[in-house]
Image (cartoon, rainbow, N blue to C red):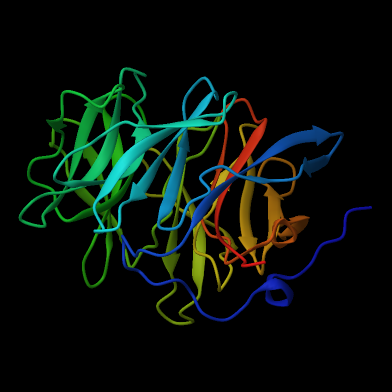
Length: 298
């Protein structure tokens, strides 16, 4: 029998800052993932980046063989790196005077997109060839962009910084820009196997942050679950399970099978010698969980 725990029993006070690119000593951890009947099993995690500084924003390749991520140098300049899962080797992908964040392989599989902090501090959406060459500006007029998620080859949603932050739906060619929501969080995702996407939004009355789903092209929205008070980030498994972490515990909700939402504890990620688990990503084949956390000094 699966135990359900109310969110309030798991949550810790102190929502993460809305600063889109806060730096810190974070690493990316990688753990095997598998389903055994109705249970999600997480194996022991390994520190995949293993260095002092900011390693963050993991994003799997479509073939699940590698991870693109953001790494900052001692001067605070961020570039995109690639981790090969099989060989455990890392390689720099971009090496530019600017800083690049939030790498995401685009739906056509030929390029990846990033949020680029340009020399005048403007933040706009750019793309690169998979080898880090051929930088191209994607959205010329939309700024400052903090985060993004592709819905298909020609449509995406973006987090635009401001007071409040806003959720924009926009075409790849820059047309059709529409504000869909205000006071949103930093986690944007296309929901697997559904023509919909998810994001977080703060309730103006209760100040609670909710995970919201919205069909592509629709004005209808559904509140799924409250986000943990200590972690605004969430992600999805390929079969439609919603994941987040709170208090060092990985929790899930089965979006397809469980109409009444409740977070179910899955694994104690803190047992891997980490604290402050934040961003999560699941590989397209469902076999790997990547998460960002701070290593605990021995």
